[in-house]
Image (cartoon, rainbow, N blue to C red; front, top):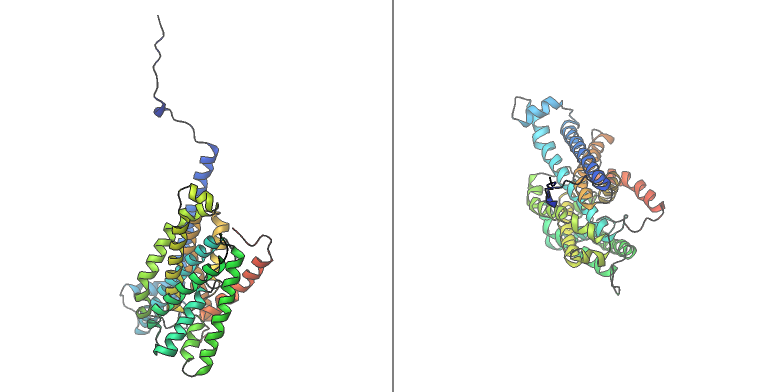
Length: 358
């Protein structure tokens, strides 16, 4: 008898996963677990932000106040009227600073870059100073459009100066352009402030960076810009991964270099501009958090941006809690606390070898 051989279609042959595929799946699973853990930490920090202050409140009382239960008028006012909007502002501004910092570092391929170092927040502050000096705007709720305009103009100017006379962007040129432009704008703002110190007391308070006295009237107008900026940041993860391979390879992979950079500039403007308009210039959060995320998840920009959106609010809220406790019953601006934490980190990064280029 002749043997009958049955042909098996090639599509039905199940090939075992390669070692690279197994490692990629394990890595993705580990990153997911870490992201869930980061979310749990963020929830705990939010509870602490609602509970800790000049009037300590137990977590159970916090929950009762938030759900409309029976609590004292003092506890209800502290949790619902004061700490809840302050905490939500911290979440929104922290996420904006973290995501914009990750975008700036990815676009410039410079680990020392963040919206503050590149002058984006300085531009927003400069336009806010102009609004106070020439348009009589004195409330934080009126700073939004001026801060967005200043952030956009400064971002475009820094990228234009960094690429001036060159075919490709150079990270060190962008860094120097941002530092120089920040110094010029800071000098102009100081001159404007000295022209009428009493009138510009509101600017001095805003420039220190604070979550105190930031309510829904300041946050709600900025939320659409923060949401659009955050969505754009998440969508840029894949194109930024391609761009990290170089412009020629990115184009070969189908990523539009020009479109990626323009979208990145828009996202940075929306995130950094709106965040600065709400809370003032808060330094170093956008510098520290992307570095921490990169150490945790590697060079994949999709994960770096996702982790930055979670870790940065946790850091900012922890700094805000520390700001309440340092000189209790008073408090210091949260921008001073983040500067105190971020300055040593910047020194360490500067002293490391191969600090320029990602």
